[in-house]
Image (cartoon, rainbow, N blue to C red):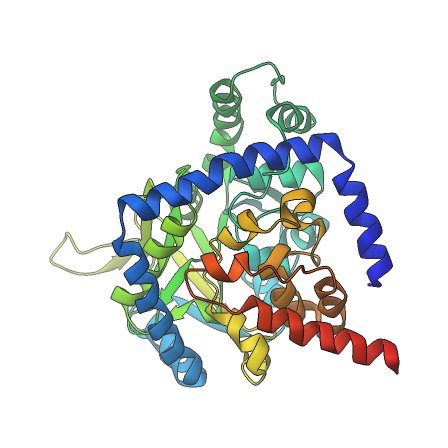
Length: 400
């Protein structure tokens, strides 16, 4: 995309009064929430340093940890493990698992499934698909893209969100309280959880030594989406791998803290299909939860990024989204300053990794290089280095 097109889109966003007000309200509450969490629980900063060191170990030995994770998923978690290098391979695997016939599918919020446009693909194939995270449900109904990695509908005011939800048949109005709107959403989704044939999620981290997935959430939707349907499919990007179960647990603590949602309402560990050994200690898989657990490890350009000293930095990202909250440009344009999925400071490199350097290079030309993103990043990602690298790529391309 040309820089002129990006500028035009950003100017439209900046002149949209609803979007400006939505971002203003969201940022004004999220920034103090993160500061409050880090002040109240200062050990989160030490844990963030620890996570960086452990991620360095994985990134230096990625092939080894992919292999160990695949083995643990199969042998210890009794899951069916797959590896997908590309979007097409990942989607093909999901189609294969779903098999023939129309399915009711409930989804947890997952940026990786946004990358591969899984929801759109499944709907096109005739499946009935529901996002169960409230913000992501709003995005689904609006036909929009997430505006933040943690709070996808942060750019919409309460009034605008209610207007969108009415399109899905919910009896909500802008003058309702936040609590009243949420209550209606709960009613709307409740029977979808019960009727679902398949639950699809991502994961906030995965432990190589056990194959255990960690998911952090507050709404309660993920536990329903991943335990009520008989089949659970998890798509997990490879930079989420941590060496062991303790490291994976610490990573999700740090993510929730730096997202301002600490302690989270739920921290969920999935280490296999549901099972029981209550009769003669004989293990039987498939009880009240899923009978099948399928885990797809997804590359999507990440191993290639490891070879690039600038883009490699982004693989330390735990996707807390704090860099977006403090970015002056993101504050007025949201993820409109971004690629198909990722925006803001973290969106520059993630777009380069998932959509190509050319597209990300255009985005980087708008980066102000103020460094606020680098200052607040729990993993100390050098966004200035990344932006300068991409800016140089842009200049080289236009001079050709």
